[in-house]
Length: 174
Image (cartoon, rainbow, N blue to C red; front, side, top):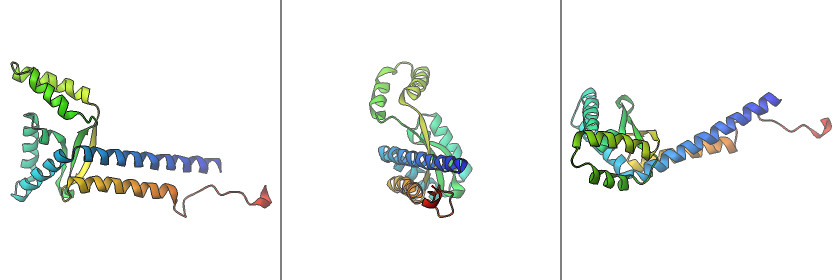
């Protein structure tokens, strides 16, 4: 009985963590709505023109290396599934940091930007990988993550009837 209860609590904890992760991803998408929408529109436009998947992946890699912020967000392409994985930083103040980077390294364009870029990446916080659907808008993708949170919340509040939930002892056994 104790093992079953422990297993059940572990499942509930796991479901609560899933809820937190889904909400966090949804909020990051909302905070970066314009950039996410730009990624979706750019990738969809190139696909609509008939660009080969491998060529598009190479283009994203090259543009990311050149400092294109839209391309830098794309971490993985899953075109067969109609999705891309974006790397979004947890920090909210990206615009402020952008402005300070433009002011400092006008003389040493190549070396200075590379070093500052690495330092900024460390300063801005952890990158969260978020899978987005190319067929949806940025806002609709965020809603999908909020919906996933709701599904996990329902599992916590209404466990499946077949799940091993601790049952109270009948009064006759106490």
